[in-house]
Length: 285
Image 1 (tube, rainbow, N blue to C red):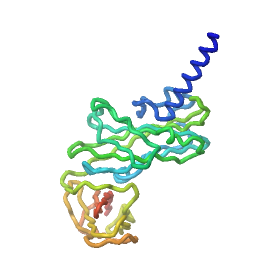
Image 2 (image 1 turned 60 degrees about the vertical axis):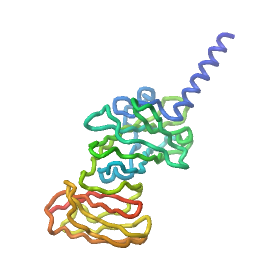
Image 3 (image 1 turned 90 degrees about the vertical axis):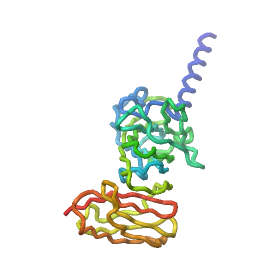
Image 4 (image 1 turned 45 degrees about the vertical axis):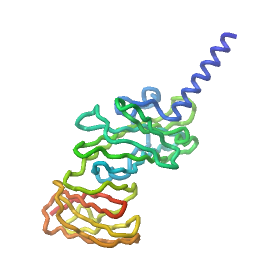
């Protein structure tokens, strides 16, 4: 009888651990030196054939505007795996004990949760039980969430995140753990613009880039209305207003001639009613 009681206890205890972890790992497992390989240790870190990415603005440009809200997504894929999980946090590059920005969920999205801890502790983004995408083979699977950038003067932000591509055997064997990090810089202080929602999809691109001395911006505004496209130097000084006027929701092409500028890196910023996006340009002469 005692053996049966112990067996039942161990079974339900183990099952509760599995179910809890399917709804997100414990806080603190989003780092290169501290991640899910402590339990899912069949393979070394980043040794599978899959990939782990963080996408959306401002990741594609490498810059953020202070106090601006962005939609980001963690994306994980691995051939042959059928259960998924992740954890992400952010911190200051200059002081790794300081969390940078704040996280939020998106209305209607039930695959992501935030561990909203006291101010003395970090918050983490992770999957819910529904967000484990149990039985979905190969991927990619994605987890969208909101990130509000820190205040002006906060400096460079590091996103640190880990993903678990599991085989759904209700254990910890046979799973591949991935880790990655992304660093983004604060957009120079002298670019003063009102905070806006920055969409996760690309509003505009430039081709060619790098270029000499002309490139063409391909713009698709999410809503018709007035918009402005300005090129800045890396000190935040506006150099040229490339376009100011009405933009339709149809694809638009805007030509930029940088013959008066020297070789280097520049920032183009497109802003309209309720949307904005920055793009890094490289001029080579």
